[in-house]
Image 1 (cartoon, rainbow, N blue to C red):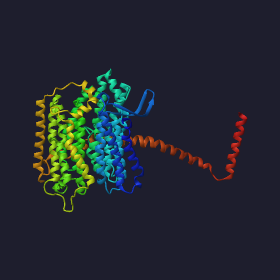
Image 2: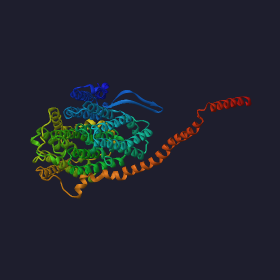
Image 3: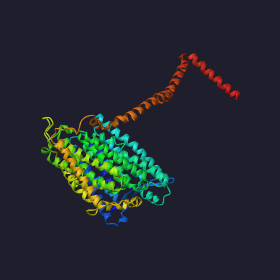
Image 4: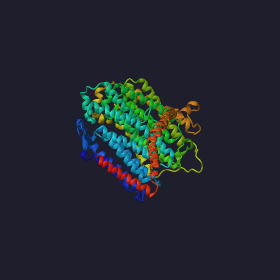
Amino acid sequence: MVKYFYFITVLPLIGFLINGLFGAKIKNEKVSGIIGSLTVFGSFVITVLAYLHITTLPEEARTITVPLFNWITTGSISISAAYLVDPLSVTMCLIVTGVGFLIHVYAIGYMHGDSGVARFFAFMNLFIFAMLNLVLGDNMLLMFLGWEGVGLCSYLLIGFFYEKKFTGDAANKAFWVNRIGDFGFLLGMFFIFSSFGTLNFLGINAALAGTTVAVSTITIITLLLFVGATGKSAQIPLFIWLPDAMAGPTPVSALIHAATMVTAGVYMIGRTSLLFAMAPITMNVVVVIGCLTALMAATIAIAQNDIKKILAYSTVSQLGFMFMAMGVGAFSTGIFHVTTHAFFKALMFLGAGSVIHGMHEEQDVTKMGGLKSKMKITFITFLMGGIAISGIPPFSGFFSKDEILSKLFFSGNYIVFGLALITAFLTAFYIFRLISLTFYGKPRYSESVHPHESPAVMTVPLIILAVLSVLGGFIGIPHIIGTNLIEHFLSPVFASAWAVLPEHHIVESTEIVLIITSVLVAAIAILLSYRAFSSGEKLYAFSGGFYDLLRDKYRVDEIYDAIIVKPLRRLSDIFYKIFDVKIIDGAVNGTANFFNSLSIDWRKIQTGVVQDYAIFSVAGIVAIILYILLK
Protein backbone atom coordinates (compact mmCIF):
# COMPACT_ATOMS: atom_id res chain seq x y z
CA MET A 1 0.00 0.00 0.00
CA VAL A 2 2.70 2.49 1.02
CA LYS A 3 4.46 2.25 -2.36
CA TYR A 4 1.44 3.96 -3.92
CA PHE A 5 1.50 6.70 -1.29
CA TYR A 6 2.66 9.27 -3.84
CA PHE A 7 -0.93 9.44 -5.07
CA ILE A 8 -1.67 11.50 -1.98
CA THR A 9 0.07 14.44 -3.66
CA VAL A 10 -0.83 13.52 -7.24
CA LEU A 11 -4.59 13.81 -6.68
CA PRO A 12 -4.62 17.47 -5.51
CA LEU A 13 -2.19 18.25 -8.33
CA ILE A 14 -4.67 16.76 -10.81
CA GLY A 15 -7.43 18.89 -9.28
CA PHE A 16 -5.24 21.98 -9.67
CA LEU A 17 -4.54 21.18 -13.34
CA ILE A 18 -8.19 20.49 -14.19
CA ASN A 19 -9.54 23.64 -12.57
CA GLY A 20 -6.54 25.71 -13.62
CA LEU A 21 -6.50 24.70 -17.29
CA PHE A 22 -10.15 23.98 -17.99
CA GLY A 23 -11.95 25.93 -15.26
CA ALA A 24 -13.07 28.64 -17.67
CA LYS A 25 -14.91 26.01 -19.73
CA ILE A 26 -16.72 24.52 -16.72
CA LYS A 27 -20.09 26.25 -16.76
CA ASN A 28 -21.38 24.95 -13.42
CA GLU A 29 -19.34 26.43 -10.56
CA LYS A 30 -20.26 23.50 -8.28
CA VAL A 31 -18.37 21.14 -10.59
CA SER A 32 -15.13 23.00 -9.88
CA GLY A 33 -15.80 22.73 -6.15
CA ILE A 34 -16.65 19.04 -6.36
CA ILE A 35 -13.47 18.31 -8.35
CA GLY A 36 -11.35 20.23 -5.86
CA SER A 37 -13.02 18.55 -2.87
CA LEU A 38 -12.96 14.98 -4.20
CA THR A 39 -9.25 15.09 -5.03
CA VAL A 40 -8.47 16.12 -1.45
CA PHE A 41 -10.85 13.49 -0.09
CA GLY A 42 -9.04 10.88 -2.20
CA SER A 43 -5.78 11.95 -0.57
CA PHE A 44 -7.42 11.61 2.84
CA VAL A 45 -8.53 8.05 2.09
CA ILE A 46 -5.00 7.09 0.98
CA THR A 47 -3.59 8.62 4.17
CA VAL A 48 -6.03 6.65 6.32
CA LEU A 49 -4.99 3.44 4.56
CA ALA A 50 -1.33 4.30 5.13
CA TYR A 51 -2.05 4.97 8.80
CA LEU A 52 -3.78 1.60 9.15
CA HIS A 53 -0.82 -0.05 7.42
CA ILE A 54 1.94 1.39 9.59
CA THR A 55 0.04 0.66 12.80
CA THR A 56 0.28 -3.02 11.93
CA LEU A 57 4.09 -2.79 11.82
CA PRO A 58 6.50 -3.01 14.77
CA GLU A 59 7.47 0.42 16.11
CA GLU A 60 11.03 0.13 14.77
CA ALA A 61 9.68 -0.55 11.26
CA ARG A 62 7.28 2.38 11.05
CA THR A 63 9.66 4.59 9.07
CA ILE A 64 9.30 3.88 5.35
CA THR A 65 10.96 5.73 2.48
CA VAL A 66 8.99 5.82 -0.79
CA PRO A 67 11.43 6.68 -3.63
CA LEU A 68 10.05 8.64 -6.58
CA PHE A 69 12.94 9.58 -8.88
CA ASN A 70 16.51 10.85 -8.91
CA TRP A 71 16.31 14.60 -8.62
CA ILE A 72 19.74 16.27 -8.40
CA THR A 73 23.08 14.56 -9.00
CA THR A 74 26.14 16.76 -9.35
CA GLY A 75 29.56 16.45 -7.77
CA SER A 76 29.18 15.29 -4.18
CA ILE A 77 25.48 16.18 -4.13
CA SER A 78 22.99 13.40 -4.76
CA ILE A 79 19.40 14.20 -3.84
CA SER A 80 16.43 12.06 -4.76
CA ALA A 81 12.76 12.97 -4.61
CA ALA A 82 11.31 10.60 -2.03
CA TYR A 83 8.57 10.59 0.58
CA LEU A 84 9.12 9.69 4.22
CA VAL A 85 6.13 7.81 5.61
CA ASP A 86 6.26 7.63 9.40
CA PRO A 87 3.93 8.47 12.31
CA LEU A 88 4.77 12.19 12.16
CA SER A 89 4.20 12.65 8.42
CA VAL A 90 1.04 10.51 8.49
CA THR A 91 -0.36 12.55 11.40
CA MET A 92 0.27 15.80 9.53
CA CYS A 93 -1.21 14.38 6.31
CA LEU A 94 -4.37 13.34 8.16
CA ILE A 95 -4.73 16.93 9.39
CA VAL A 96 -3.97 18.52 6.01
CA THR A 97 -6.26 16.28 3.96
CA GLY A 98 -9.02 15.68 6.53
CA VAL A 99 -9.53 19.26 7.68
CA GLY A 100 -8.59 20.49 4.20
CA PHE A 101 -11.39 18.41 2.66
CA LEU A 102 -14.00 19.89 5.02
CA ILE A 103 -12.79 23.41 4.21
CA HIS A 104 -13.06 22.65 0.47
CA VAL A 105 -16.65 21.42 0.87
CA TYR A 106 -17.55 24.49 2.93
CA ALA A 107 -16.02 26.73 0.25
CA ILE A 108 -18.48 25.39 -2.36
CA GLY A 109 -21.23 27.24 -0.51
CA TYR A 110 -19.15 30.21 0.63
CA MET A 111 -17.78 31.03 -2.84
CA HIS A 112 -21.15 30.61 -4.57
CA GLY A 113 -21.66 33.33 -7.15
CA ASP A 114 -18.02 34.40 -7.36
CA SER A 115 -16.72 34.68 -10.91
CA GLY A 116 -13.37 33.10 -10.01
CA VAL A 117 -14.56 29.85 -8.40
CA ALA A 118 -12.47 27.59 -10.66
CA ARG A 119 -9.35 29.70 -10.04
CA PHE A 120 -10.06 29.60 -6.31
CA PHE A 121 -10.27 25.82 -6.12
CA ALA A 122 -7.22 25.47 -8.38
CA PHE A 123 -5.19 27.54 -5.90
CA MET A 124 -6.66 25.64 -2.92
CA ASN A 125 -5.66 22.29 -4.46
CA LEU A 126 -2.19 23.65 -5.20
CA PHE A 127 -1.95 24.74 -1.56
CA ILE A 128 -2.76 21.21 -0.37
CA PHE A 129 -0.25 19.77 -2.87
CA ALA A 130 2.53 22.06 -1.63
CA MET A 131 1.81 21.38 2.05
CA LEU A 132 1.77 17.62 1.52
CA ASN A 133 5.16 17.80 -0.18
CA LEU A 134 6.43 19.86 2.74
CA VAL A 135 5.45 17.26 5.34
CA LEU A 136 6.28 14.19 3.25
CA GLY A 137 9.68 15.12 1.80
CA ASP A 138 12.44 12.86 3.09
CA ASN A 139 15.05 15.63 2.72
CA MET A 140 15.30 19.32 3.48
CA LEU A 141 15.40 20.39 -0.16
CA LEU A 142 12.06 18.74 -0.96
CA MET A 143 10.67 20.19 2.26
CA PHE A 144 11.93 23.61 1.16
CA LEU A 145 10.19 23.16 -2.20
CA GLY A 146 6.90 22.64 -0.36
CA TRP A 147 7.87 25.43 2.05
CA GLU A 148 8.14 27.89 -0.83
CA GLY A 149 5.06 26.38 -2.48
CA VAL A 150 2.79 27.20 0.45
CA GLY A 151 4.31 30.70 0.47
CA LEU A 152 3.36 31.15 -3.18
CA CYS A 153 -0.15 29.78 -2.63
CA SER A 154 -0.72 32.02 0.37
CA TYR A 155 0.23 34.99 -1.82
CA LEU A 156 -2.22 33.89 -4.53
CA LEU A 157 -5.09 33.21 -2.12
CA ILE A 158 -4.65 36.15 0.27
CA GLY A 159 -4.68 38.40 -2.79
CA PHE A 160 -7.50 36.45 -4.46
CA PHE A 161 -9.72 39.54 -4.66
CA TYR A 162 -6.99 41.32 -6.59
CA GLU A 163 -9.22 44.19 -7.66
CA LYS A 164 -9.09 45.47 -4.05
CA LYS A 165 -5.89 47.28 -3.12
CA PHE A 166 -5.77 46.14 0.51
CA THR A 167 -5.81 42.47 -0.51
CA GLY A 168 -2.82 43.02 -2.76
CA ASP A 169 -1.01 44.85 0.04
CA ALA A 170 -1.74 41.99 2.46
CA ALA A 171 -0.53 39.39 -0.05
CA ASN A 172 2.69 41.31 -0.66
CA LYS A 173 3.25 41.70 3.07
CA ALA A 174 2.85 37.97 3.64
CA PHE A 175 5.14 37.19 0.72
CA TRP A 176 8.02 39.46 1.74
CA VAL A 177 7.91 38.78 5.48
CA ASN A 178 8.07 35.07 4.73
CA ARG A 179 11.03 35.60 2.41
CA ILE A 180 12.97 36.94 5.39
CA GLY A 181 12.31 33.78 7.35
CA ASP A 182 12.98 31.59 4.32
CA PHE A 183 16.43 33.13 3.94
CA GLY A 184 17.26 31.90 7.44
CA PHE A 185 15.93 28.43 6.58
CA LEU A 186 18.05 28.39 3.42
CA LEU A 187 21.22 29.35 5.30
CA GLY A 188 20.51 26.66 7.88
CA MET A 189 20.16 24.13 5.10
CA PHE A 190 23.55 25.15 3.63
CA PHE A 191 25.16 24.76 7.07
CA ILE A 192 23.61 21.31 7.46
CA PHE A 193 24.98 20.10 4.14
CA SER A 194 28.45 21.49 4.81
CA SER A 195 28.47 19.93 8.30
CA PHE A 196 26.91 16.52 7.63
CA GLY A 197 27.24 16.06 3.87
CA THR A 198 23.55 15.25 3.45
CA LEU A 199 20.12 16.87 3.48
CA ASN A 200 18.26 13.61 4.08
CA PHE A 201 16.49 13.61 7.45
CA LEU A 202 17.40 10.02 8.28
CA GLY A 203 20.96 10.72 7.12
CA ILE A 204 21.19 13.79 9.35
CA ASN A 205 20.01 11.81 12.37
CA ALA A 206 22.50 9.04 11.58
CA ALA A 207 25.31 11.59 11.28
CA LEU A 208 24.31 13.21 14.58
CA ALA A 209 24.57 9.86 16.35
CA GLY A 210 28.35 9.89 15.95
CA THR A 211 28.89 13.54 15.19
CA THR A 212 31.99 15.51 16.01
CA VAL A 213 30.30 18.74 14.96
CA ALA A 214 30.60 21.42 17.62
CA VAL A 215 27.55 22.35 19.66
CA SER A 216 28.07 25.95 18.55
CA THR A 217 27.63 24.90 14.91
CA ILE A 218 24.47 22.96 15.73
CA THR A 219 23.22 26.00 17.64
CA ILE A 220 23.79 28.25 14.62
CA ILE A 221 22.01 25.75 12.36
CA THR A 222 18.98 25.46 14.62
CA LEU A 223 18.74 29.21 15.20
CA LEU A 224 18.71 29.76 11.44
CA LEU A 225 16.04 27.09 11.01
CA PHE A 226 14.03 28.73 13.77
CA VAL A 227 14.18 32.04 11.89
CA GLY A 228 12.42 30.20 9.07
CA ALA A 229 9.90 28.84 11.56
CA THR A 230 9.14 32.32 12.94
CA GLY A 231 8.25 33.40 9.41
CA LYS A 232 5.97 30.53 8.44
CA SER A 233 4.41 30.14 11.90
CA ALA A 234 4.09 33.88 12.60
CA GLN A 235 6.21 34.29 15.73
CA ILE A 236 8.03 37.36 17.01
CA PRO A 237 9.44 39.25 15.12
CA LEU A 238 7.84 37.96 11.89
CA PHE A 239 4.23 37.58 13.07
CA ILE A 240 2.93 40.75 11.42
CA TRP A 241 1.81 39.13 8.16
CA LEU A 242 -0.71 36.66 9.56
CA PRO A 243 -3.43 39.03 10.87
CA ASP A 244 -3.42 40.90 7.54
CA ALA A 245 -3.84 37.58 5.73
CA MET A 246 -7.53 37.86 6.63
CA ALA A 247 -7.94 39.85 3.41
CA GLY A 248 -8.48 36.60 1.52
CA PRO A 249 -11.74 34.59 1.45
CA THR A 250 -12.60 33.01 4.81
CA PRO A 251 -11.99 29.39 3.67
CA VAL A 252 -8.44 30.50 2.84
CA SER A 253 -8.05 31.85 6.37
CA ALA A 254 -9.24 28.53 7.76
CA LEU A 255 -6.86 26.54 5.55
CA ILE A 256 -3.84 28.71 6.40
CA HIS A 257 -4.54 28.86 10.13
CA ALA A 258 -5.74 25.33 10.79
CA ALA A 259 -4.34 22.80 8.33
CA THR A 260 -1.44 24.13 6.32
CA MET A 261 1.02 26.98 6.28
CA VAL A 262 1.31 28.18 9.87
CA THR A 263 1.91 24.67 11.21
CA ALA A 264 4.94 24.27 8.95
CA GLY A 265 7.38 25.79 11.44
CA VAL A 266 6.20 23.54 14.27
CA TYR A 267 6.42 20.50 12.01
CA MET A 268 9.93 21.43 10.87
CA ILE A 269 11.17 21.53 14.46
CA GLY A 270 9.52 18.18 15.07
CA ARG A 271 11.14 16.68 12.00
CA THR A 272 14.59 17.97 13.04
CA SER A 273 13.96 17.34 16.75
CA LEU A 274 17.33 15.63 17.31
CA LEU A 275 19.16 18.70 15.99
CA PHE A 276 17.21 20.99 18.30
CA ALA A 277 17.61 18.65 21.26
CA MET A 278 21.39 18.95 20.87
CA ALA A 279 21.21 22.77 20.96
CA PRO A 280 19.98 23.77 24.43
CA ILE A 281 20.47 27.49 23.76
CA THR A 282 18.15 27.29 20.78
CA MET A 283 15.59 25.33 22.79
CA ASN A 284 15.53 28.13 25.35
CA VAL A 285 15.13 30.70 22.58
CA VAL A 286 12.19 28.72 21.17
CA VAL A 287 10.50 28.66 24.60
CA VAL A 288 10.99 32.39 25.22
CA ILE A 289 9.87 33.48 21.74
CA GLY A 290 6.86 31.18 21.90
CA CYS A 291 5.88 32.50 25.34
CA LEU A 292 6.25 36.18 24.41
CA THR A 293 4.38 35.68 21.14
CA ALA A 294 1.52 33.84 22.84
CA LEU A 295 1.12 36.54 25.50
CA MET A 296 1.52 39.48 23.14
CA ALA A 297 -0.98 38.16 20.59
CA ALA A 298 -3.52 37.31 23.30
CA THR A 299 -3.44 40.86 24.68
CA ILE A 300 -3.89 42.29 21.18
CA ALA A 301 -6.87 40.00 20.51
CA ILE A 302 -8.75 41.47 23.47
CA ALA A 303 -8.99 44.87 21.77
CA GLN A 304 -9.85 43.80 18.21
CA ASN A 305 -13.35 44.11 16.79
CA ASP A 306 -12.96 42.38 13.42
CA ILE A 307 -14.17 38.81 13.97
CA LYS A 308 -11.47 37.35 11.73
CA LYS A 309 -8.71 39.52 13.21
CA ILE A 310 -9.55 38.24 16.70
CA LEU A 311 -9.21 34.67 15.47
CA ALA A 312 -6.03 35.55 13.60
CA TYR A 313 -4.29 36.83 16.73
CA SER A 314 -5.67 33.80 18.52
CA THR A 315 -3.83 31.60 16.02
CA VAL A 316 -0.58 33.51 16.58
CA SER A 317 -1.05 32.99 20.32
CA GLN A 318 -1.83 29.28 20.02
CA LEU A 319 1.20 28.79 17.82
CA GLY A 320 3.20 30.28 20.66
CA PHE A 321 1.86 27.49 22.89
CA MET A 322 3.04 24.93 20.34
CA PHE A 323 6.53 26.40 20.25
CA MET A 324 6.68 26.45 24.04
CA ALA A 325 6.00 22.72 23.98
CA MET A 326 8.66 22.12 21.33
CA GLY A 327 11.15 24.26 23.28
CA VAL A 328 10.94 22.06 26.38
CA GLY A 329 11.28 18.88 24.34
CA ALA A 330 7.58 17.95 24.48
CA PHE A 331 7.55 17.35 20.73
CA SER A 332 4.58 14.99 20.67
CA THR A 333 2.62 17.46 22.83
CA GLY A 334 3.33 20.24 20.34
CA ILE A 335 2.04 18.07 17.49
CA PHE A 336 -0.95 17.11 19.63
CA HIS A 337 -1.84 20.78 20.00
CA VAL A 338 -1.37 21.22 16.25
CA THR A 339 -4.00 18.50 15.83
CA THR A 340 -6.60 19.80 18.26
CA HIS A 341 -6.01 23.37 17.13
CA ALA A 342 -6.73 22.30 13.55
CA PHE A 343 -10.16 21.08 14.67
CA PHE A 344 -11.35 24.03 16.73
CA LYS A 345 -9.61 26.79 14.76
CA ALA A 346 -10.96 25.52 11.42
CA LEU A 347 -14.37 25.34 13.09
CA MET A 348 -14.16 28.89 14.41
CA PHE A 349 -12.90 30.41 11.16
CA LEU A 350 -15.57 28.66 9.14
CA GLY A 351 -18.10 29.67 11.80
CA ALA A 352 -16.91 33.27 11.42
CA GLY A 353 -17.35 32.91 7.67
CA SER A 354 -20.90 31.68 8.25
CA VAL A 355 -21.59 34.76 10.41
CA ILE A 356 -20.11 37.07 7.78
CA HIS A 357 -22.16 35.29 5.09
CA GLY A 358 -25.36 35.63 7.14
CA MET A 359 -24.60 39.25 8.05
CA HIS A 360 -24.01 40.28 4.42
CA GLU A 361 -20.23 40.73 4.76
CA GLU A 362 -20.26 42.53 8.12
CA GLN A 363 -17.18 41.60 10.20
CA ASP A 364 -17.33 44.06 13.12
CA VAL A 365 -18.54 42.24 16.26
CA THR A 366 -19.70 45.53 17.80
CA LYS A 367 -22.28 45.70 15.00
CA MET A 368 -23.71 42.23 15.60
CA GLY A 369 -25.44 40.80 18.68
CA GLY A 370 -28.39 38.46 19.19
CA LEU A 371 -27.42 36.10 16.40
CA LYS A 372 -27.83 32.87 18.39
CA SER A 373 -31.56 32.75 17.56
CA LYS A 374 -30.95 33.64 13.92
CA MET A 375 -28.08 31.22 13.23
CA LYS A 376 -28.59 28.34 15.64
CA ILE A 377 -26.25 25.78 14.04
CA THR A 378 -23.50 28.33 13.59
CA PHE A 379 -23.93 29.48 17.19
CA ILE A 380 -23.83 26.01 18.76
CA THR A 381 -20.84 24.83 16.72
CA PHE A 382 -18.96 28.09 17.23
CA LEU A 383 -19.63 27.86 20.98
CA MET A 384 -18.14 24.34 20.99
CA GLY A 385 -15.03 25.67 19.30
CA GLY A 386 -14.83 28.49 21.85
CA ILE A 387 -15.11 26.07 24.77
CA ALA A 388 -12.44 23.85 23.20
CA ILE A 389 -9.88 26.64 22.70
CA SER A 390 -10.59 27.92 26.23
CA GLY A 391 -9.47 24.57 27.66
CA ILE A 392 -12.62 23.30 29.34
CA PRO A 393 -12.84 19.50 29.75
CA PRO A 394 -13.66 17.24 28.04
CA PHE A 395 -13.24 19.37 24.92
CA SER A 396 -10.11 18.78 22.84
CA GLY A 397 -8.26 21.99 23.65
CA PHE A 398 -8.25 21.13 27.35
CA PHE A 399 -6.13 18.02 26.86
CA SER A 400 -3.47 19.56 24.62
CA LYS A 401 -3.27 22.92 26.44
CA ASP A 402 -3.12 21.26 29.86
CA GLU A 403 -0.39 18.92 28.62
CA ILE A 404 1.69 21.91 27.49
CA LEU A 405 1.24 23.70 30.83
CA SER A 406 2.22 20.52 32.64
CA LYS A 407 5.37 20.06 30.53
CA LEU A 408 6.37 23.67 31.15
CA PHE A 409 5.95 23.31 34.90
CA PHE A 410 7.79 20.02 35.29
CA SER A 411 10.63 21.22 33.05
CA GLY A 412 11.36 23.92 35.63
CA ASN A 413 10.29 26.87 33.44
CA TYR A 414 8.15 28.37 36.20
CA ILE A 415 8.15 31.93 34.87
CA VAL A 416 7.16 30.74 31.41
CA PHE A 417 4.52 28.53 33.01
CA GLY A 418 3.08 31.53 34.86
CA LEU A 419 2.97 33.64 31.69
CA ALA A 420 1.40 30.74 29.77
CA LEU A 421 -1.28 30.44 32.46
CA ILE A 422 -2.02 34.17 32.12
CA THR A 423 -2.22 33.68 28.36
CA ALA A 424 -4.69 30.82 28.87
CA PHE A 425 -6.84 33.20 30.94
CA LEU A 426 -6.70 35.84 28.22
CA THR A 427 -7.55 33.25 25.56
CA ALA A 428 -10.79 32.28 27.26
CA PHE A 429 -11.56 35.96 27.93
CA TYR A 430 -11.19 37.27 24.34
CA ILE A 431 -12.88 34.23 22.78
CA PHE A 432 -15.97 34.65 24.94
CA ARG A 433 -15.89 38.39 24.34
CA LEU A 434 -16.17 37.51 20.66
CA ILE A 435 -18.94 34.96 21.30
CA SER A 436 -20.87 37.29 23.62
CA LEU A 437 -20.73 40.32 21.32
CA THR A 438 -21.64 38.23 18.28
CA PHE A 439 -24.39 35.93 19.52
CA TYR A 440 -25.76 37.38 22.77
CA GLY A 441 -27.49 40.62 23.73
CA LYS A 442 -29.71 42.79 21.62
CA PRO A 443 -29.11 43.19 17.88
CA ARG A 444 -26.81 46.11 17.08
CA TYR A 445 -27.01 45.80 13.29
CA SER A 446 -29.16 47.98 11.05
CA GLU A 447 -32.72 47.02 10.17
CA SER A 448 -31.69 46.54 6.55
CA VAL A 449 -29.59 43.52 7.56
CA HIS A 450 -31.48 40.23 7.87
CA PRO A 451 -29.22 37.55 9.37
CA HIS A 452 -29.84 33.99 8.19
CA GLU A 453 -28.36 30.56 8.66
CA SER A 454 -25.92 29.28 6.07
CA PRO A 455 -26.80 26.42 3.66
CA ALA A 456 -26.14 22.79 4.55
CA VAL A 457 -22.99 22.62 2.44
CA MET A 458 -21.50 25.10 4.94
CA THR A 459 -23.09 23.92 8.18
CA VAL A 460 -22.35 20.18 7.79
CA PRO A 461 -18.56 20.76 7.86
CA LEU A 462 -19.16 22.93 10.96
CA ILE A 463 -20.98 20.06 12.67
CA ILE A 464 -18.23 17.54 11.83
CA LEU A 465 -15.52 19.89 13.08
CA ALA A 466 -17.56 20.56 16.23
CA VAL A 467 -17.66 16.82 16.96
CA LEU A 468 -13.90 16.62 16.45
CA SER A 469 -13.43 19.65 18.71
CA VAL A 470 -15.34 17.85 21.44
CA LEU A 471 -13.90 14.34 21.07
CA GLY A 472 -10.53 14.90 19.41
CA GLY A 473 -8.66 15.42 22.66
CA PHE A 474 -9.19 11.85 23.83
CA ILE A 475 -6.29 10.72 21.66
CA GLY A 476 -4.00 12.48 24.16
CA ILE A 477 -5.45 11.95 27.62
CA PRO A 478 -3.08 12.60 30.58
CA HIS A 479 -0.95 9.74 31.87
CA ILE A 480 -2.71 9.85 35.23
CA ILE A 481 -5.91 8.79 33.45
CA GLY A 482 -4.65 6.31 30.86
CA THR A 483 -2.51 5.87 27.77
CA ASN A 484 -1.64 8.95 25.76
CA LEU A 485 -2.30 7.47 22.32
CA ILE A 486 -0.77 10.21 20.19
CA GLU A 487 2.39 10.33 22.28
CA HIS A 488 2.72 6.57 22.01
CA PHE A 489 2.12 6.72 18.25
CA LEU A 490 4.71 9.47 17.70
CA SER A 491 7.32 8.12 20.11
CA PRO A 492 9.40 6.27 17.45
CA VAL A 493 9.99 9.59 15.68
CA PHE A 494 11.10 11.51 18.78
CA ALA A 495 12.78 8.73 20.75
CA SER A 496 16.33 9.73 19.73
CA ALA A 497 15.71 13.38 20.68
CA TRP A 498 14.16 12.45 24.01
CA ALA A 499 17.21 10.29 24.77
CA VAL A 500 19.40 13.42 24.53
CA LEU A 501 17.19 15.66 26.68
CA PRO A 502 17.10 15.50 30.48
CA GLU A 503 14.20 13.51 31.91
CA HIS A 504 11.67 15.41 34.00
CA HIS A 505 9.94 13.62 36.85
CA ILE A 506 6.17 14.11 36.88
CA VAL A 507 4.40 14.13 40.25
CA GLU A 508 0.81 12.94 39.81
CA SER A 509 -0.61 14.95 42.71
CA THR A 510 1.01 18.12 41.34
CA GLU A 511 -0.33 17.39 37.88
CA ILE A 512 -3.85 17.09 39.29
CA VAL A 513 -3.44 20.50 40.95
CA LEU A 514 -2.20 21.96 37.65
CA ILE A 515 -5.22 20.54 35.81
CA ILE A 516 -7.65 21.97 38.35
CA THR A 517 -5.86 25.33 38.26
CA SER A 518 -5.94 25.62 34.46
CA VAL A 519 -9.65 24.72 34.34
CA LEU A 520 -10.49 27.25 37.08
CA VAL A 521 -8.50 29.96 35.32
CA ALA A 522 -10.38 29.33 32.06
CA ALA A 523 -13.77 29.12 33.79
CA ILE A 524 -13.21 32.43 35.66
CA ALA A 525 -12.18 34.13 32.41
CA ILE A 526 -15.29 32.83 30.62
CA LEU A 527 -17.56 34.01 33.44
CA LEU A 528 -16.00 37.47 33.59
CA SER A 529 -16.14 37.88 29.83
CA TYR A 530 -19.73 36.70 29.55
CA ARG A 531 -20.89 39.01 32.34
CA ALA A 532 -19.06 41.96 30.78
CA PHE A 533 -20.17 41.56 27.18
CA SER A 534 -23.27 39.36 26.89
CA SER A 535 -25.59 42.34 27.32
CA GLY A 536 -23.75 44.24 24.62
CA GLU A 537 -23.43 47.28 26.87
CA LYS A 538 -19.66 47.03 27.34
CA LEU A 539 -18.28 46.79 23.85
CA TYR A 540 -14.69 47.19 25.01
CA ALA A 541 -12.74 45.47 27.76
CA PHE A 542 -11.44 48.83 28.96
CA SER A 543 -10.62 52.25 27.58
CA GLY A 544 -7.79 54.72 27.54
CA GLY A 545 -4.26 54.81 26.25
CA PHE A 546 -3.39 51.17 26.87
CA TYR A 547 -6.56 49.99 25.13
CA ASP A 548 -5.67 52.16 22.14
CA LEU A 549 -2.19 50.63 22.16
CA LEU A 550 -3.66 47.12 22.06
CA ARG A 551 -6.19 48.11 19.41
CA ASP A 552 -3.28 49.41 17.32
CA LYS A 553 -1.37 46.12 17.86
CA TYR A 554 1.37 47.79 19.92
CA ARG A 555 2.03 49.79 16.73
CA VAL A 556 4.54 47.16 15.64
CA ASP A 557 3.76 47.84 11.98
CA GLU A 558 4.43 51.53 12.49
CA ILE A 559 7.72 50.75 14.27
CA TYR A 560 8.84 48.43 11.46
CA ASP A 561 7.80 51.06 8.96
CA ALA A 562 9.86 53.72 10.73
CA ILE A 563 13.05 51.74 11.37
CA ILE A 564 13.09 49.40 8.35
CA VAL A 565 10.73 50.29 5.52
CA LYS A 566 11.26 54.06 5.31
CA PRO A 567 15.09 53.89 5.66
CA LEU A 568 15.19 51.22 2.96
CA ARG A 569 13.05 53.37 0.71
CA ARG A 570 15.34 56.36 1.26
CA LEU A 571 18.36 54.18 0.58
CA SER A 572 16.75 52.80 -2.55
CA ASP A 573 15.98 56.35 -3.71
CA ILE A 574 19.64 57.30 -3.25
CA PHE A 575 20.77 54.10 -4.95
CA TYR A 576 18.33 54.73 -7.77
CA LYS A 577 19.44 58.33 -8.32
CA ILE A 578 23.16 57.45 -8.32
CA PHE A 579 23.48 53.95 -9.75
CA ASP A 580 20.39 53.70 -11.93
CA VAL A 581 20.05 57.26 -13.21
CA LYS A 582 23.68 58.33 -13.42
CA ILE A 583 25.55 55.08 -14.11
CA ILE A 584 23.14 52.75 -15.93
CA ASP A 585 20.99 55.39 -17.62
CA GLY A 586 24.10 57.54 -18.12
CA ALA A 587 25.90 54.71 -19.93
CA VAL A 588 22.91 53.82 -22.10
CA ASN A 589 21.89 57.39 -22.88
CA GLY A 590 25.53 58.45 -23.29
CA THR A 591 26.13 55.73 -25.89
CA ALA A 592 22.99 56.80 -27.72
CA ASN A 593 24.01 60.46 -27.61
CA PHE A 594 27.51 59.62 -28.88
CA PHE A 595 26.23 57.80 -31.94
CA ASN A 596 23.58 60.44 -32.46
CA SER A 597 26.28 63.17 -32.56
CA LEU A 598 28.45 60.99 -34.82
CA SER A 599 25.56 60.47 -37.21
CA ILE A 600 24.96 64.24 -37.35
CA ASP A 601 28.59 64.75 -38.45
CA TRP A 602 28.71 61.85 -40.91
CA ARG A 603 25.43 62.62 -42.61
CA LYS A 604 26.93 65.90 -43.83
CA ILE A 605 28.73 63.91 -46.49
CA GLN A 606 25.33 62.95 -47.90
CA THR A 607 25.04 66.14 -50.04
CA GLY A 608 22.95 64.76 -52.91
CA VAL A 609 25.47 66.22 -55.43
CA VAL A 610 26.67 63.59 -57.98
CA GLN A 611 30.04 65.26 -58.44
CA ASP A 612 30.77 64.92 -54.69
CA TYR A 613 29.99 61.21 -54.78
CA ALA A 614 32.24 60.80 -57.88
CA ILE A 615 35.13 62.47 -56.06
CA PHE A 616 34.66 60.13 -53.05
CA SER A 617 34.60 57.11 -55.38
CA VAL A 618 37.78 58.16 -57.21
CA ALA A 619 39.50 58.93 -53.89
CA GLY A 620 38.56 55.48 -52.68
CA ILE A 621 39.93 53.81 -55.82
CA VAL A 622 43.18 55.76 -55.53
CA ALA A 623 43.51 54.78 -51.87
CA ILE A 624 43.03 51.09 -52.72
CA ILE A 625 45.61 51.24 -55.55
CA LEU A 626 48.14 52.98 -53.28
CA TYR A 627 47.57 50.34 -50.57
CA ILE A 628 48.20 47.53 -53.07
CA LEU A 629 51.33 49.16 -54.49
CA LEU A 630 52.80 49.99 -51.09
CA LYS A 631 52.06 46.46 -49.80
